[in-house]
Amino acid sequence: MPGSTRAKLITAGIRQFSQYNYDEVDVDSVAAEAGVTTGSLYHHFQSKKAFYGVLRDDMTRRILDRMEAASESVPPDQAIKATLLAAYDGVLRIEAGKLLTNPDPRGEEDAIAHFLASQVSLNGNAPVAATLGVILAAALKAALTQALAGHAEAREALKALL
Image (cartoon, rainbow, N blue to C red; front, side):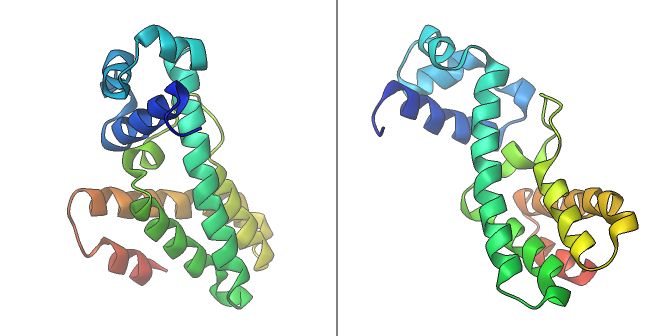
C-alpha cells in the first residue's frame, strides 16, 4: 500500500541496496530515509537479511518476467540472446543495480542462472545446461557491473559475447 511504513521501507531499501553492497547498507540509514524507526523495519521484516530477501526476490521476479516474455517472443534459436538482453535492459530500467549483481548473502540459488539453464536445455544442450546457465548469468552480471561503472559499451559487449 503506497505511503505505508512497509512501502516506505521497501522504496528506501531498493534504492540503497541497488547502489551499495549488502554490507555497506545499514538498517538505521534505510529507516531514516524512509522516515520511520529501525524498530519498524524489524517489525515488518524481522532482520536485515530477511528485508534484503524480500527486495531481491521482488526484483528477481520482475527480471524473470521480462526474460520469460522475451524468450517467448522469438524463435528458439534466438531465445538465449533475447533473454539475456531483456534481463540486462530490465535491471538497468528498474534500477536494481547491485541488488541483482552482487552475491545473495542468504546463499539462495540464483534464479536467473536457473532460468538461463532451462533455456539452454530447451535448445538441446541439457548435459551442460546448469553450468552454462551459471556462466551466462555471470556474463550478464559482469556486463551490468560494467554498465553501472559508466561503461556505455557494456550492452554491445554482451551482445558480441552471445
